[in-house]
Image (cartoon, rainbow, N blue to C red; front, side, top):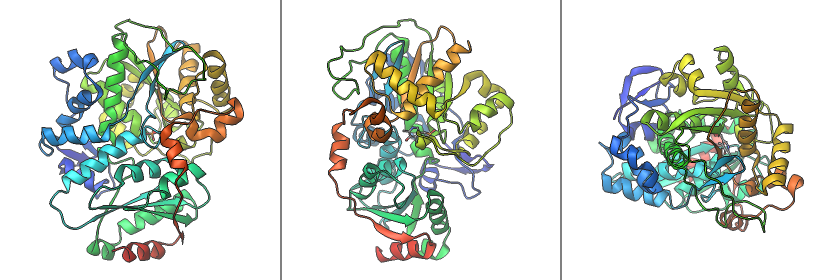
Length: 455
Ligand SMILES: *Cc1c(COP(=O)(O)O)cnc(C)c1O
C-alpha cells in the first residue's frame, strides 16, 4: 500500500515513510491510496473474532508489504493488552475505550505507533528523537506508548501550570527515555517550538527527529479496529459483561439488554481534531456494519457547521469542560475531505454541538438514571445522540457512544456533580508517580540546548 499527501498525489511514499515523517514535506497529511475491503470471510466472522484478530485483519492490508504477519501479530498483542468492552447502558451501548494505561482512547493509536516505529527502524543505529507538544492527554499517551522502547527518545512539551496534576504525572513521571519539558507559555507556544525544532537543518544533521501528533497515519489506522469490533458485536446483538473497571456506582445490578436487530449501527464520536472519526470512516469503507456517524462536538463546532452549510470556516478554539476537544481548526478535516466530498460526508455524518451546561446535565442525569459515570467528552457524545433523536434526524437506531476517557481522568469536573468517582488501577499508579520535568522558557534555543545536552 502506498500513501500520498493530501496536497500532492505525486508525493507517494511507503507506510514506513509516511509514519516516520508524520507530515508530508508539502505540509499535507498522508492518506492511503485506497481503503481496502475486508475479505467476505473476514466480514462474516468479525463478531466471533477476538479483538486482536480483528486488529490483525484491519491493519494488515495497510502495512502488508512492510510488516510481516508474525511481526504485526506481535505488535498488536503488545499494543492492545487491554480490553474495549461494549456495554449496554439504558437505550444504547457505550464502547469503553479508556481501559488502557492512560485512561483515554489515545492509548490505542499511541501504543501501536510506538511499536510500529520500533519495528520499522530495526537495524538502524542512530537513535530517534520524537518531539510532542501537548495540552494534556496526547503527551501522556505518547509518553506511555514509547516508554522503554529501545532506540527511541521522546521529549514532551507541555504548558507549565496548565495541565492537571494527574496529566503532569502521566507525562513527567516515567523517566528513562521520556523527557518532560514544562514550557513557560501556552500550548500554542509548545506547538510552535516543536515545529521550529523539526525544521532546524543544523539539528537534523545531528539527530533523527520526528513527531508523534495525531495527524500521524500510524496512529490513525489502528483506531479503525475498535469501530469494526464494536459495530460487529452490536449488529449481532452481542455485548460484554461490565467488569470491575466499568465506571458504575457500587451496588448497581449489571447492565443488560439486547438489541439483536441486524441493523447497521450508528456510532457517535466525541470529536476535536477528528482523527478518531476519520478512523471510523475507514472502518465503514472497509465494510464494517456501520450505517452512519455522529460528529459530536462541544461549542467548537467547525465541522457540524460545515456539514450544515458546505462552508469550512476554521476559527480560534474556545475553552470548555471537554478540553481535549477544544479545537477550532481540526487537522484531520483535510484527510476527511481527501476521501469524501461534502455531499458524501452529509450522507454519513450528522453533526451535533453540545454546550458545557448540557454536558454537565447529561453527566448528572445518566448517573441518576443508570448509576453510570460519563466523563465530559463521552457526555458530549451521549447528548449529541439525544439532540438528533429529538430533531427526528435519527430514528430507530442501534447506537453506540464512543467513551473516549475514563471519568476519573476528569474528576475536577465529574466529582463536584456526582461525588467521588471510582479510580481505575492505571490512574492510581500514575498518581503515585513523582513528576520530574525541566522548566524552559518559550524559546526555541532553550529547546535545542536541551536536545543537544541529551545527545
Ligand atoms: C483527543 C480526545 C478527543 C478528540 O479526539 P479527536 O481524534 O481529536 O477528534 C476526545 N476525547 C478525549 C478524551 C480525547 O483525549
